[in-house]
Image 1 (cartoon, rainbow, N blue to C red):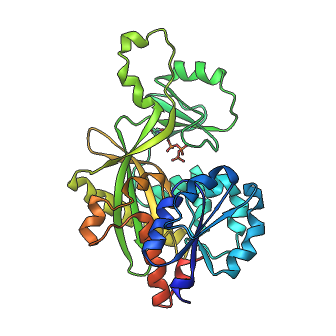
Image 2: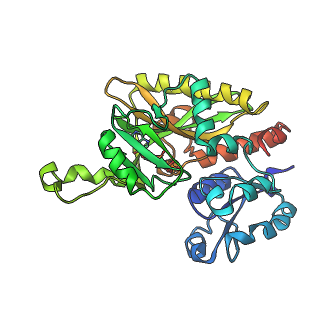
Image 3: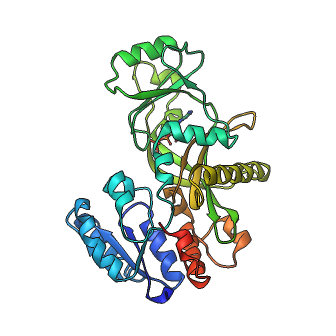
Length: 338
Ligand code: ATP
């Protein structure tokens, strides 16, 4: 297989621009599959997008598959795949897919994710069981909530009981609210070099929780504002170097455990540990995203960390394309595709 005649394809949303720019920089052909309302955006980037494949709705995606396979395509998934296609259609996709689809089951299930993190000796927020007494602030997360929608916080048992009375969701978890700063650490694990790389770090700008501090507490009184956690944007960060060492060690353990949970390949490619760092420097992992996250969009021209390893702008999108290119050259493509 020649990489210059291979298409890197993704769905139009999330980090598609980064993925396709990176693929073009690495010498691939590129295509984006999108619905009509996104076409104008991607047309503006025809400098690095060779083909725009428009479909009426995401439900029509399976009909495109034959064409994509025929034109020698590799799909690069991102955070909107499961949301747009649904878990089953995502898993059943026949177009060669960068990543390990078996990891999706572990990523999408909070209980399994927790088992994974605990097995990797990573701190996770305490989870209260039904009937447990609440002895600290908590965050209540409804089942399948996305982007922090459908969450609420309570500072004690009394407030939790009151809020649960009017909570419409049936399935939810009650988790310790960790006081600290949220830090999102983006990694890339290469099964070809067996090396873990820190790609970049971001924090999220969430509405309205990130704006509450702008209104003094005395002015908030009576307004009945509840914090919500919907992501609006991402902000680049550089973390203390001593914390980077701990983050790397955590990332390594997460990868090692994944090889046991979903053998033999485990998790590879891009992933993100979504952490909260406390005032005592403890790093809690709220969640793992086992694919490229939107926070990497802050680093399309590289990050301070990729600058240390590469003499050229290296985004996570480009790093994925570089891995595919290397796999083609080494005739090891099967190891990175599903
Ligand atoms: P996504 O899938 O986009 O990552 P999500 O719906 O899974 O979002 P989380 O990332 O779990 O949501 O959480 C959204 C936000 O809620 C976090 O960025 C953080 O601000 C806050 N949050 C979640 N869990 C905790 C916790 N245990 N302690 C403190 N804050 C939390």
